[in-house]
Amino acid sequence: MAEPPRLQGAPGMAGPPGLEECSSRGFSEEQFRAACRELDQPAPAAECPWQLLVETMGVRIYRLYHEQSGLYEYKIFGGLADIPPKLCADVYMDLDFRKKWDQYVKELYEKTYDGEKVIYWEVKYPFPLSNRDYVYIRERREMDVDGRKIWVVLAKSVAVPQCPEKPGIIRVKSYKQSLVIESDGKAGCKVYMYYFDNPGGMIPSWLVNWAAKSGVPAFLKDIQKACLNYSKST
Figure 1 (tube, helix red, strand yellow):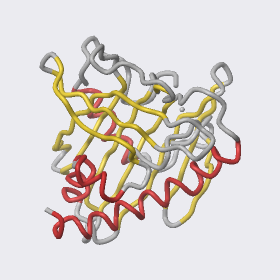
Figure 2 (cartoon, helix red, strand yellow):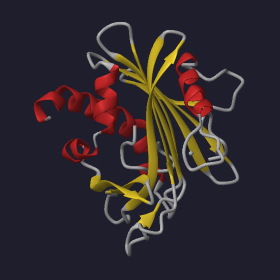
Figure 3 (cartoon, helix red, strand yellow):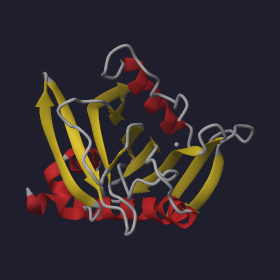
Figure 4 (tube, helix red, strand yellow):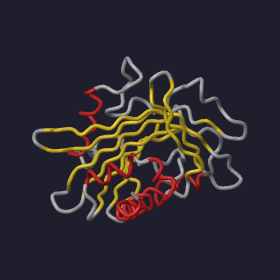
């Protein structure tokens, strides 16, 4: 859920499920439906190359390594108790509120360029690493899949001339993410996330491991807390 500090590989790319390139800059209907199907595959098949990285706090994180790039793709399966799916989606989409609860946000805003809504996001990295920034588009849809109501958010990086690179900040030019949320049948929700980015530069292995194993569960805990506080702040 864009996410703990973006570290690659922590929440990798070569044709991720449901985020294949389409002819336009936006997202296709099939990309949204492919993301929905991931909810029904809570664990990659044993013979597939995805590996279980960690299971903790009710969260399972899988990753897929690509030898050519040395990067990882990630799949995260988890849940948020007592958080309705629509509330979770609303909080995730609210950029102004994100700046209040996400400690890694340095700068975050949405602007319209040539009729297209684009998000700029600078993410704090620990010293002495340079901060990273992202320029990306996203789209949210409420899907009806065989009577099931599923919230889906897709995002990917784009090149926008009006958002040039800044000195001292490394631009993440390859970023893709999908977030899928559905009721758990009780008071909470099930959450699936696919994540890849290429942050550039040399990231220490200890930081990669921390972000993947600890940063993602901590992020889910933070967004759960943010959801509980959302009504008080809006």
